[in-house]
Length: 480
Image 1 (cartoon, one colour):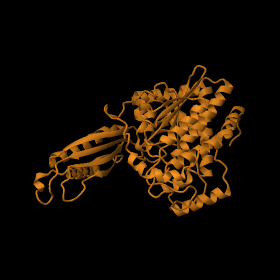
Image 2 (cartoon, rainbow, N blue to C red; image 1 turned 30 degrees about the vertical axis):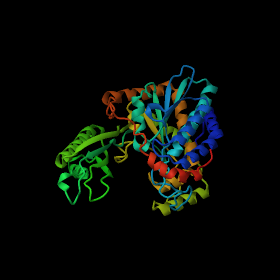
Image 3 (cartoon, rainbow, N blue to C red; image 1 turned 90 degrees about the vertical axis):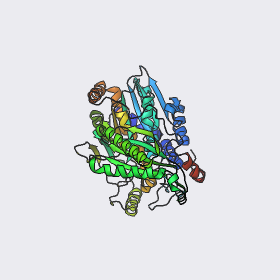
Image 4 (cartoon, rainbow, N blue to C red; image 1 turned 60 degrees about the vertical axis):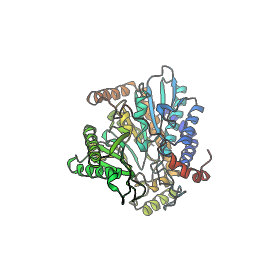
């Protein structure tokens, strides 16, 4: 860490005085490993923690029981700074923390293979420490913590925006667990639609009178055939993926219901025509099979457009904070994990990086944070909570994000976010520059949601899967 002025030293002290509590919260959420829209225990733990620290809570917002907003204001209440937090886990990634080989806690169960457990805790540590600093220094402003479920399903933020929850937010500090310190500026990732197409036909005896039936499964298969043949004629930025959710129960019964779940991704300007062509494939498949079909859109999200001025401010604060100091034991753990997971063996060496579309190849990953970047200037603090080289949605991430390495990353990330918030609260010209840049973006890309008017959060989507494993996982929960 570079030499700090007196006020930053006070921020560091406030964070470090509280850090162990939030390391524990992160580990507890890690043990709950709740899937999207099922994060009842995780959301409650974070919301209760913020409420006990003096924040005003709105629970169950935007039609999602595990979504919440926690707010605290001082003086005039301006500026309003938003902090995005996530806490959902992923299927099939259960893993013993700190193990250098793949060892699930409960085989087949969910696990925090993207590090979202650290993110909810990191932002809570940030805003609670900043509340203390604002009170002591008499700093006007509002801190708004957005408890955002189901990021892996790209669900919460478009619905939260539609509910008007971001309407007064002047700037947003996002975060994500990462394997090094990074912040990006400019365009990033791909926009995406997530939707289910269900075909309905008629049952019949497959051997005795198949002509009396109409196969819904044929509809799904022909739709897949159509979208596969689209690929050659779509821009190289597109990504199309699907899984068959249901396709019949037995070969001797013509299936009268079948469904497929699609993700389609592309640049924002291409996504609408891509979606419409896929809808034509569904319509054509229904016509060819004499079936009917229904489409249910789960979510639609934009690309990210990270604010360059905010990203630069965050990067400067990353350089100020620097890399945490690591022990020899942590270095040995990192190298063993990298070796056994098949990653490059580089120990705990990692960069502090400011990236842009000009310096980083296009990656077609998606996040519902993209919508937030179009309604308020936003940039993401990617903080080191995953052993270097660990890529997302992997058991090695689950292993590393409930260790001392992750704990140090939580504190380092909170320092960057808190320093950035302090700068925004005390240097009006910085915020003005960030807002001016955002207003120019808004002229070029005025926000319009990709959600259809009748779209609703897919509550219950993961209920059955969580019910399968929750009772087996409970004995391994960490006591908060």
